[in-house]
Image (cartoon, rainbow, N blue to C red; front, side, top):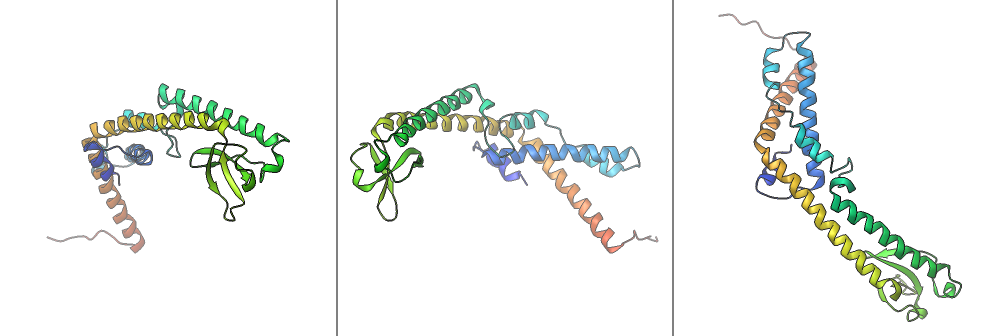
Length: 228
């Protein structure tokens, strides 16, 4: 039931990626049902069902716009916009450089005794390394977390602070671009809100028809013959 999503889009709200995917899925499902019943009608007369299903609009452009930007896991894909593709490319490059610098520290024999383990981890979107408490001042930078015992500090060394700042800026740009894409897609849903609502109402009616038929089948019910 995507009616609440349609209503929110019509009011100018931004729909989440998963909600937009549900809209696209409903459009596709509605069209499949229409094709199914039209195919059934070629074998036997189904005038009432065919009349009902004929009101389902394809809305291929809406479905395509959504599915070209959002994958099956409700993730906005890189090629959703040239700007997002560029930002994501810069993000991957920046992350690789930060990890390379930190791994150089981890591999250095100079720092081996100062590290709790040879592992790059993340704390609050910042790349850090686990440093023994007594060597906290060797690396400079910022402390972002510590172990339960307090023996290990998760430190962002001075050499990657600026790079982590740049990475954070890129992530904020990525977030803004994703929001812009979702707003654009939500506006498309709003533009077709009346047709989408009609589709959902028709699908609900058809669902009810099939539910009644299924129930009648389970009961082995028959149509009564009425006298005058």
